[in-house]
Amino acid sequence: MNLTFAELALQYKKTLLEDVLPFWQNHSLDEQEGGYFTCLNTQGQVYDTDKFIWLQNRQVWTFSMLYNQLSPDSDWLEVARLGANFLADKGRDSEGNWYFALNRAGEPLVQPYNIFSDCFAAMAFSQFALASQQDQAKAIALQAYNNVLRRQQDPKGPYNKCYPGTRPLKSLAVPMILANLTLEMAPLLDAAQLDQVLDQTVQEVMTDFLDAERGLLYEAVGPDGAHVDCFEGRLINPGHGIEAMWFLMDIGHRRGDTALIQQAVDGILKTLDWSWDPQYGGLFYFLDAEGHPPQQLEWDQKLWWVHLETLVALVMGYRLTGREECWRWYCKVHDYSWSHFADPGQEWFGYLNRAGQVHLQLKGGKWKGCFHVPRALFLCWQQFKQLSADQMLSS
Image (cartoon, rainbow, N blue to C red; front, side, top):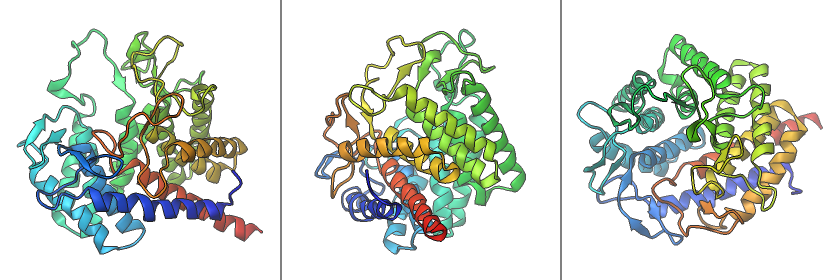
């Protein structure tokens, strides 16, 4: 790759504004029932009308965030409003817990079986509150956030399948998403609560889930942070680990904590060294920490979000630290991602087989919506824009 920082900024900008956002604006809006279609084929045609709360809220967040941070485009606000109104009316049970899935009309299909629907609701409505200036949106965001805090030690509640007490495990997903969510909620929280939750999440991720000796983040550990020798306890999810590290870099940057930033970069580089496929390129989806066969049969697939979160982490790490290892890895992951996942003029593909061939002919589904691609494109654009400006000042 021989592009300048300015050329890279333009590449990310054009792909976001001319390819990816128009795809979702043209194909995903359900003007009849409200909310969004996310199950879209390569031509943008709807192949399933069920509505998954994670993805509904993520699309509200995306268009609200761009309205707030990029441009007060009234069309973007109306896209966000279409989802926010649908979700405010249909998305929760009588106790305020967010469902996992609804049918097209908004009738519940899947119970609120964990707190991640609540996490994305808090993210979505905090940004929508800023964009719309609606008090109701702010109240919904705070209610969902408090739900997450209340249930973080027992995220599945009555829907937990595990037999109590036999093999208690806690998941990296909870503190990592709470770190990012709390930064998202910052305008709505008082300073003391903000600092308390951030301190807690940084401590838990970097002490319990990061193996200091190996430099890898484990997906699940015992309640005291100890490794547990079982499928779940040996699981490494490279994408989650790398994404968690850029969340913590973001916290470190906002707090001026250079030690935390360097520690997070170390974790990213260790994870990349360990999880890059030496035969075909790209990052494995799941790995076993001891080299045993992973439980997940899709372990060797290459997924869009893993690579996009890695691009964000590497360009952020390079801008904040100047470490050449970040730039070398960025170029490697950039070349793989843009030559395999990107689809010129369209939304990106999501799922490749190990050899890098498109595995599923879809642009959206039950798990892939309007979130990872636009967020990563926006964040990388902003990082390269800053790097270009810094380069011009120093020349």
